[in-house]
Image (cartoon, rainbow, N blue to C red; front, side, top):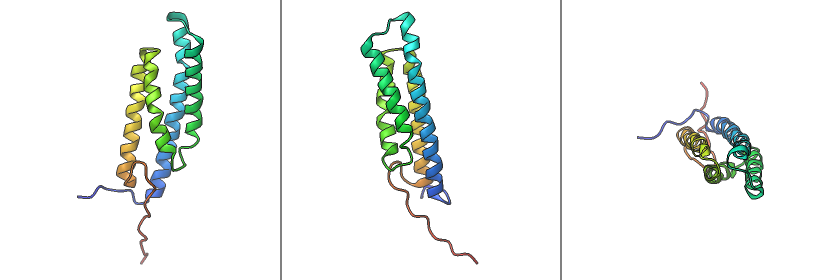
Length: 130
């Protein structure tokens, strides 16, 4: 049994890359809130602050490349350091976990609609009109 695909896989891939870009952008914004949570409770060292700001900037920049072929792969790789922010703030285990689950869901929807999680969009069959 074959998996159902969208009538226009290219259009579906474009829409899903927009959703992926929004997700990665929201991840970058969420990481910016971690220093605010750490400062009054656990203290905030310069190294931790630098790591969080760099991760946030990388996530925000990665949201801009989601429409490129390597964009989904970059976003997937960045899910690991996002989840690792839980080492700095325990609440980020939950927040990062939710974002990782959303990312996995987007990849699954892309596989269902386009036919591949990371690969190029297959050509849609040409349908002749009446």
